[in-house]
Amino acid sequence: MRIMSRAVPVPAEGGQHRQPIIAAAIELTARSGWQAVTMGRLAELAGVSRQTVYNEIGSKAALAEAMVAHELGRFLSVVGTAFDRHPDDLIEAIYDAVRGVLELADDNTLLRAIASATHGTAPELLPLLTTDSGELLGRAKAVVAARVASYRPPLTAEQVDVVIDLVVRTVLSHVMQPSETPARTADGVAWVVARVLGVTANPPLRHT
Image (tube, rainbow, N blue to C red; front, side, top):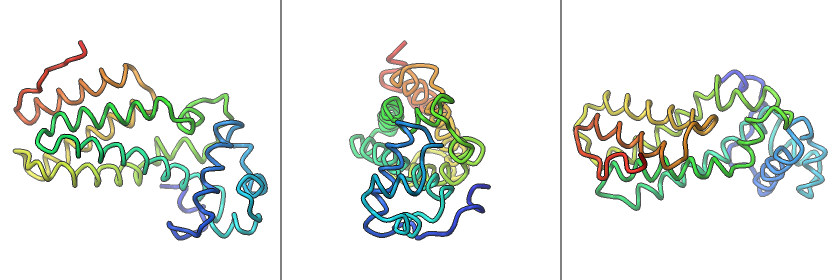
């Protein structure tokens, strides 16, 4: 990711103030736009000093990454819960996971701010979900791959990687620019995966 080279390295975990600062940044971006986010303003909102903000975050570029990583964690939690609900049915797990992710995205204030030019979006944010999304995709694919492996799909490891890459990229595309309801999109993705696996989705295309 090109933005990474501009960020001051900061430990991923950070101290006790890191998460409140990130939460304040997300709220401020959603309300007033990325251009309104300054270290001084974050310090005021989080109730800490400016130096604490710099110590915990490092730079505004690093803050952008931290915000996206924070929200990605929420989405991956939804994925994990969906797979837990369907331990014996991979197709239903995928349907549930995709639908849950897209429903969360539909009500996600940070994503809406990033996607909308009226919120003053800066180059530091949008590339993290588009042209510079390699790290995000890698983390998401790793989580999905670990869950899919337990179902022992009738494919080679390389074939499974192709399917997972296709699904994750498709979902990210719909997160940024949905073309259907979450239910219909999830239905289509699950149907495609079922066809690849050579199994019958039950029910097939339930939202036609």
